Length: 81
Image (cartoon, rainbow, N blue to C red; front, side, top):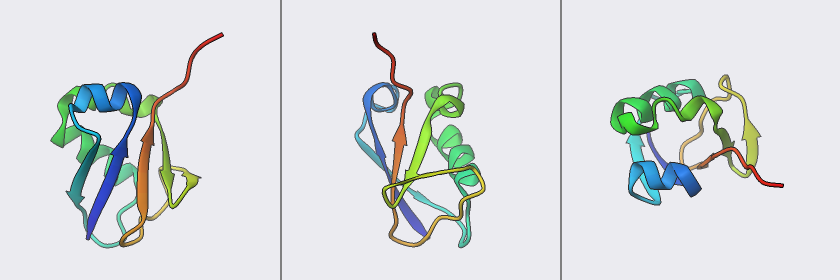
């Protein structure tokens, strides 16, 4: 299944694009998505564990299964004061 991932802030900077498309197996989880992203964009590798993932507008754990045509967003940690 094809999944489109939206990237923001530092993730967007590291990848050099605002969105990516990945081909993943049916029933793939967020953990599989993270591994595929790290392989596709090695610069994201060390950064990915600190990012939250949103699937369909809801925060998702690594065990969350991805659905076809779901909106997936990679959300970097927020800092500030």
